[in-house]
Length: 72
Image (cartoon, rainbow, N blue to C red; front, side):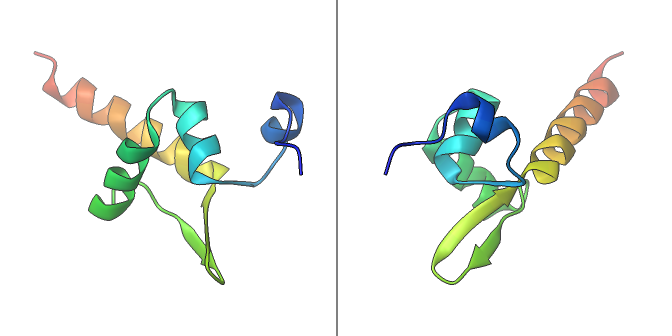
């Protein structure tokens, strides 16, 4: 099975850990750390873990809010 193209990936509702990492330009290990800490949500479907695309947007928004709060 071939990996999804960037166009296919951009239209998906849920992503694998590797796809989410690519979208955020971070490593898979960092994604797993974010999932473990609760900073990023995921869904289990059987034995699979998927990250809803809207959870990525919520994570980015939370990071931006946190950064804004730190500014003088």
